[in-house]
Image 1 (cartoon, rainbow, N blue to C red):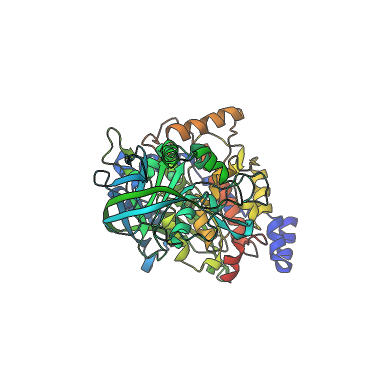
Image 2: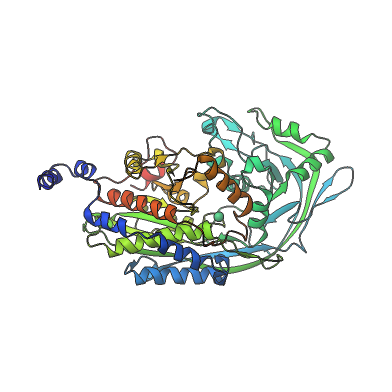
Length: 550
Ligand SMILES: [Zn+2]
C-alpha cells in the first residue's frame, strides 16, 4: 500500500518519472502472461500452408491471408483502423512480370562478337515504367557505387550527364572501418539497391545493371533471381522517375563485359573505392528489348486498433507492424514452386496477432492507442508499409513508436535481442532496461554491412519520421552455444531464405516468438503510458522528417 501511495503522489507531480519507477501495470502483466507460443504456431502453420499459395502480393493467396488476418482481429474484438471503418487499407499497384522468352538483352562491343545474356542465369531485369515493351539501345557507363552522398563528400557521378544511358554499378558502398564514413562497416541507405535505382532514375538514366557479388549484396544470386523472377509490384501513385530496365548481372558476366571492353574487372572494382573515381563509358552498347506482362491490381494492408484509455493520449499511438506477403507461386518453375514464407513472415504475423489478442482482452488498456498493422508488398520493396507511412490512420507525428517483426526464427528461447536502430531513438534506455528484465543481452547487428535497417518495414515509418525499429533475436539460445545458433542462421540463409523450402515444420519451437512478443508488449505498453512521445537522437538522418511533421 505504501508503494501505491507513493505512486499516486508522483503521478500528480511528474508523470514520466512515475512510469519509469513503476514498470508494468497489472493489466499489462496479465496480458503478457497470456501470450501463447502455441497460438503463434497456429498462425504460422495456417499462413504458410500450401492453401495460402505463398501469399503473393496481388495473388489469390495474398488476398486470402489479408481476409483471414482481418477476421482474426475482428474475433479478438479489435476495432477497424482501415479505410471507411473497415479493417483494410486499399493500395493500388501495378505488377510487372518480365517475359523471359521475348525479352532480349545483349552487350554489343564496338569490336568483337555480341554477348547475348540468358535471363535468370546471367541477368534479371524489370521494366519500372508500366510499359508492355521497352527498347533500349544505349551506351553503358560504369559509375562505381552509383552514390552521391554530399555528407560523406562522395560523388560517383562527378557531374557526368547520364541521361539516356545504362549505368553499370556495384551494390553496397565504399568499404571502410571509419564510423564517420558511410557509418563504417554498417550499410547506409546509399548501399541499398533501391537507392541505386532511384538515384539513376532521378538523373535520367534509362537502365541500371547492378553487379551481383554475394559478399557485397549479403545474399546469393538465387535470392536475386527468385525475387526478380516472379512479378514485381509498384505503387500506382508513386510519381518518382522510373527506369526502363532495372536489373542485375552475375559477377562472371560483368567479368566478360569488362574483358570485351578491354578492361579488367578487378581493377574497375578497386578504382571505384576511391573518392577520385570518375564514371567510365565502356566501348559497349546495351541492346535490350524488355517485354512485360503488366496488370493493375489492388492489395490491402490490414489495420486494427485498441483505443487508448486516456481520451487525450488516445489520439496518439504505438504501432506494431509485420508484413504478411511473401513471394507467392512462381508458376513457371518446376517442382515445388510455392514460396510458403513460414519464417518470412508468418512468424511476424503470428506475433502481431497475438499482441492484438492480448491487448484487446486486457481489463485496462494502455493510455495511448495501439494500432496493429499487417502490411502487404514488403517483398516488393517495402511498398505496403511505404503506403502506410504516407497514409497513416492517424498523423505520423502522433505515432510515438513503430515496433516491427520480420522473420523471427522459431528456435527456442533467445538470450540475445537484436534491435538495430533503437539506439538512434530516445527509447533506447527503456529498451535496455526491459531487455535486462527479460534476461536478454542486446546484440549489436552482426552484419551491419547488410543494411538490415533499410530492409524491413520499420524503415518506411522512419522515412516519415516515426521512431521505428525491428525486434529480433540474436544467435544465442538457451541450452545451446553461440555456434549452434550461428549455424542455424547460416543454414537458413543458404537453404530456405526466399526459397520454397521456407516451410512450417512441426519441430519449430515458438518460445522465441512468444518471448519477443512479450518483450514488445511490455515495451509498447510502457511507451504508450509515458509522458512524452519517442524521438530521434539529435542529428539522426530521420530527425528532420519527425520535426517537419510537428
Ligand atoms: Zn522476405
